[in-house]
Amino acid sequence: MDPMRVISRDSIPRIQDVSHDGQVHNLGELRDFRWSDLLKEFMPDPAEFSVSWVRLLHGEVLEPHVHLIESMMIIYAGSGGMLGALERPIAQGDVIVVPIGSPHGFVGGPDGLYALSIQFGEGLYTSPDKPRVHFTSGDDLLDGLLAYNDLRLRDYVEGPLFRLFESGDPEHSRGRAVQVEALQFWFDGMQRLRHTSRATCTDPRYAAAFSADEKDAGSAPADSPGQRDGAIEAITAWFAYQMYVLDNAEKVALVHLVLANATTAYSKRATPSRKSAGDQGVTPQNVYGGTQRAGLVEALLRDESPRTYARLKEVIGEAWDMVAAVTDRLTELAATNRPTGSLASLSTSLPLSRSVGS
Image (cartoon, rainbow, N blue to C red; front, side):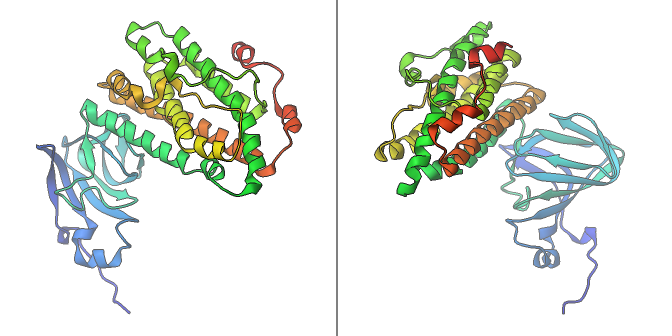
């Protein structure tokens, strides 16, 4: 049995700055536990967990930056302040949760700021020549937002909806048919959302983002409204309502980063297998042309404030949660193979255009 040991902080090598894109950025003092041979042997695999000592002296600043990995800061002594998307005082006993892509920085208080920096994966500075951070210019903040959106998109396309459609099992054919019936209403609702977003945009700078050539918009709503389902109808109404309460930048993020990507992914991955299985009826709409407008969208969302990027991340997160709720409902309907008629009992009595205004 290995003996117990006490390893002092001073025995762990330290760094005080890091170079990123040709610029040197102050870190205060940082000591990664894996720079100690004894601690490195004791700790689990770096892909699972990393931890570092960090310290900022009075007035010392760690500039706002973003991570592409989830992180926590545990303040064990001193005090200071947070910079970036969340600006507030912090002190001993606080635990700071840092999601992917959230811009944040710190300044040391009168007695300094002492913390443990924890990552759920390889440490941010375990390899100092390849730091896993982006110090926040406007481009970096936008990159963090787009990285978070890509992560949510990946979770969506790896979910049960696509696995069902890509299954060759004949027993799933009825499940796919049930999904197609419910999806028709969802996609028709997204088509109506196009017109709502255009009608509610009064800023000429954003007008192009909310217009669409008909060749980019996919098929028009089907003659048959599809099979209505109460849960899917409520979520469709939620998206339409956002066009009335969000500002233009938030609507751009919701429509182009979430809805356009979700419908484009469905079209590319699920439609071929659906057609090969003989399913008929629904053709997904590429809301606003999918990825074809990526350059315009990035230009509109560039050079916003850290607070705006934090809000955009919230909007994107909420929208992906609602998309996930749709896919969960579709998977549930397919799993139970409900007969078409039984879905009607779950639907609301008002059409979308009336329920939004009520």
